[in-house]
Image (cartoon, rainbow, N blue to C red; front, side, top):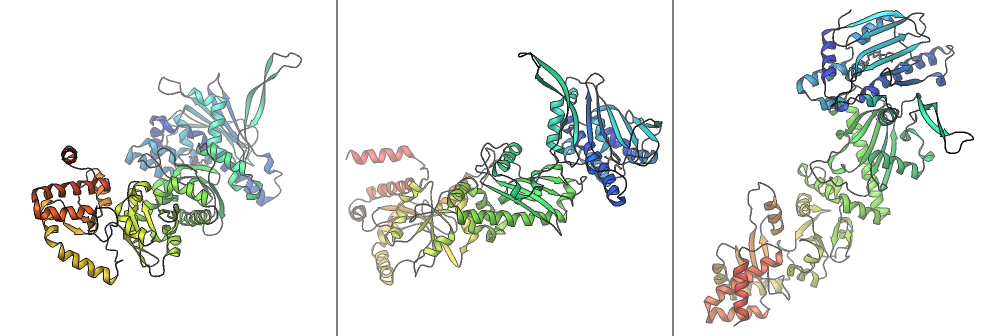
Length: 625
Ligand code: ADP
């Protein structure tokens, strides 16, 4: 018995004792080794030209044997000499496996098994004894390599017809925790092959049991055996676009990404040169139920030359496009690449930035050419784009700003910033917005009266992130964003300004009295320039608006912030005259009215009031006067 090299021994132990969450990938590993071995021989054939071997001669075969409890994987690839058997299977030659081993030891995280090309040793995840029969192409001798695990291995001469490699796995016993027998079931094998190795370029055969109606006997069936090719061999994404129907794309999308709705858009693209890849991406119609939760994991499937190496490669998608589903197949990536290595992979970065551009231009095309689709898309994923503007200190705002939609007060539908600016009045400098819970609620806000009167378009912001996103954008096309309910809009004419100054002087005492009555609750009480028919409203001064206050305070563990509140009164409203009168005749009552007006302003803003019972009592006592 020969000993494994120390490194191999350790990896082997890890395999044997690993928890079997991803053990099904042993099949992927062995199949991809077989595929590589055929590649090598096929390549040699192409070079030599006269080997007499054709591409069609190559195959891989899987044979489950339930009685013997063995699973055999066989190929007619290049095979291995005695030395090669010892060198390839007795040591970890490849840096990929080595890297994996180090990861395992550092993290003790078995979850990562599935992310790696762990290679031949993964066979020990499911079997006690592995026997490899191999005959190198062009050699007369065949060799048998066998190992029952960490103790070591033996190599002996054996008989084997033809070149290639045959690996026989004696499966571990099935226990209560681990069902190993499932790997002998044809449906299971079929589904693993479909999942990981569908696109291996050589046929993977398996003899399967089938049933058919017995000839002559109507209600009787008979069982027969037939060879089945388990893999489709040609991946959809490598086919020519014009050979693929819409239905095929959609079926593929549904099967692979478990969505029952057809995608809104399909992006099928490839590149050659500095980065060579095929990519097939989908923009879903609806957000998955967990999309806006922490559980959601973004990422594209990653294939290396037709073999899936990662289920969700996060590095291929920026966060703001995390809704995209799909896959990337690149021959530039090694099967043995680890997550950590991927992060630093320059090829991958290049692919990511190309895909980002593709996705963006697809979205733009949708926005420009099929507005209805885009609005549907935006209803599902617009929020993510707005987060994208806001996150990373606004780094991506230029990329994303033209993809945003906001509800327009004049158009009564979502519009882009560009469209808004295109419609601006000649002397209009700023872009106006106002926040609220819903379009219907905002429509009723007294603060909108002035702009409505002047015929100015407003953007209604109904998502919490909206105002934050606009603050980060700061301006669009040179036009600043102005909050209708708090910023100084500068819309008054010189005369109006003068009149306002006069009013301020005129009502100075009354306003001061009211402010004192609302001690601490508002920063000031003013006569409003925005109100036209409503008696009262609340606005704010400074960087934090009332809407932002709500959002910020709703965050868990947030420090409480408060907008600087301003109570605005409409001097043309009959109530104002009442206030004036009370100021002279009944100051106690005026104090009460100050509270009432303030509470009403809060209610209009959708801010919860501190003492609803007191408010109710006040109103009732008024009613019974
Ligand atoms: P990797 O595939 O990453 O190189 P493995 O542990 O899976 O690592 O395999 C080690 C080596 O064994 C391979 O590089 C290859 O040279 C050889 N090998 C494995 N399986 C086969 C096979 N079916 N036919 C020929 N050679 C093989």
